[in-house]
Amino acid sequence: MIEISRIREQKDEVVNGLKVRGLDVATEVEQILNLDKQWRTKKQEMDSALAEMNQISKEIGQLFQQGKKDEAEAAKQKTGELKERSQTLKTEFSDLEKQINDLLLNIPNVPNKLVPEGATEDDNEVVFEKGTIPTFDFNALPHWDLATKYDIIDWEMGVKVTGAGFPFYKNQGARLQRGLINFFLDEAIKAGYSEYVPPFVINEDSGYGTGQLPDKEGQMYQVTADNLYLIPTSEVPLVNTLRGDRVKKEDLPIKLTAYSPCFRREAGSYGKDVRGLNRLHQFDKVELVMASDQESSYQELDKMVEHVKGLLEKLELPYRILRLCGGDLGVTAAITYDFEVYSTAQERWLEISSCSNVETYQANRMKLRYKDEEGNTKLCHTLNGSALALPRVIAGILENHQDANGINMPKALVPYVGFERIQ
Image (cartoon, rainbow, N blue to C red):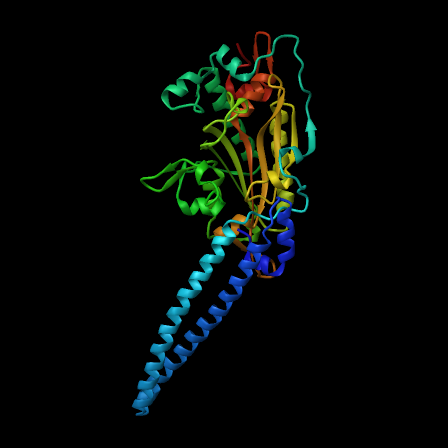
């Protein structure tokens, strides 16, 4: 959630910044500022009434001691009127606060100045590319055919037990899945991240804290009897471990990692782009989360991006990095770098990771703060990145490392999976 102080002090910057997303929020911003003016007036009136009531209350005892009963009774009546007035002001104050928050909750984060203008993924900028896209002298197969051919994923069993988008991994496919998780976690720990095993369900407060609510209810699976949600990513429980905290600057950055299954309804996703592992309702992912001071967060984002680059190079996959345009940027992000792996058989790029700096957007919702060297309280910046999401990594490994008789494992993975080839 954008800070109200930022809107007060940098109204034009906020309005113009959100135009990069293709949004015109000038009307909403004026509404917020008008409500904020009323809110501050009500708060001042309420504080004055309470202060006057406290002062009169102190005087009542003295008046009784001095035998000034009539004056004391008049003072008591006055405090009663002030109490009633302060309650009315408190109700009006709370109502204005709710109206402001409701408006703020529906305004996305202001993009960083590096974010290019644009409406769709076609306007994203390629900022880095590495690796050689393989060429084959045989009929290369897409990963869904390879998975069936080598009996490592059972699509039909997933449909039978649950439904489309919930495959069974089996045999070497299950070992590849488990090996990748351990590989990614070990690499994150080497990079200084503390490992967690989080809950896989969250409450509403956690959903609001990271921005999944009220924006993405339709994309999450809800446990209606208990008003809980299955997590769309372990970013949500990890970031919420810091909700309401006041941390020391010397303890920043705080770096957390976790493996979890992720659950996404993916409502409205159909067609060839969702075939096989391209888009699932349940998938596994290792997530990186960080809380940083404001001055260092973009340096930390660069480190996170380098970490993901290192993983893809160890997996010997051709990849590229995109800086997302305003129209393709997630609601909470100030800037996002997407990683894509080339799918040789499908002849297209597949997104396999996003690294984002959310700046203060989540911290403002969660009241995650620190004190700088001068003793000023500031909101942390939060960052997140997939390192990595498994389905499209597996798709990339199967398709790019195939030969006519099997699939070769990247050398870095062999100790984790226990075999050199799928065949």
